[in-house]
Amino acid sequence: MDGFQVVSRKKGKKAFVAKLNRSENKQQSPENISETATIRRVITTRDSLHCTDFYADFRDKMKGCVKNITCTHSGCTNGNHSMGQTVLDVIVTYGLGNFSECLIARYQLALLLAMREDLKVPPNDVLLYDPKFFPLEKEVLKSFGLQVLSENEEAKRTCEKATLFYMPHCGKSLYNNLLYANWSPDRLCHVIIIGNSFTNMVQNLPSSSLKRSAPLIMKIEPFTEEVVFPPNFQYDDVFNDTVIHIFLKDKLMSLPAEFWENCSLPVYDEDDLEFIPKS
Image: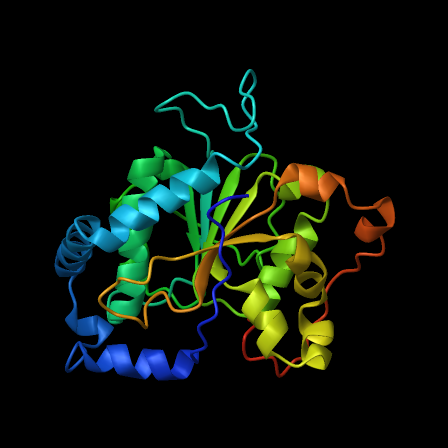
């Protein structure tokens, strides 16, 4: 498939969080931030992002990816969608973070809002969950018409429709859970994942660690197409190591039946700081 390129940047999350948080100067605590002020800051961030060359490049890449997933709409052939047609049915966002006080999370939310509009996904079909959301942040998201999930799904959402999972900088166990919930060619072909590069995980993390905490990432990575984010965003730290993953149906269907067998329920160590189980 033309236009696909594997990302190769290597940065740690702790470093980029510290760097970009400093750019906000002194952060305000949640109790000192009003809902109105937070909404205003989110809108300002979205509008400033929307007019950048970065976003124009990203939008073109994203629309190209959407054309290559298997649409669930009747009468729509894959790769032959009508102009203006809504191909994606749902956007699910996990692990966005506290956007009221963190500029990284606010830019990631800004991208979600801009992307939702361009992909023509109705706001009430945009679902979000993060166990760390403040009550104020939940109200802000609802003010944009978005749906805040009340239950921790642990990213085990099974797809019946064409779904974009927006999971910037999530832990590998969440990506693994998502793959587990959709471990079949008939389901994965409806899925797009925006998140940390599977290729970089496989290349840069010890195989023993991946086999224990993310075996399905190791298994599907050779058959995943990755589209890198544009490199021209003003803050390298916001979308570092973030790519668009798609799973082409023809490639998935060519795999032998035994590839999809023996997919057991993932179990993670209690001291896994990347994974917050539902209570």
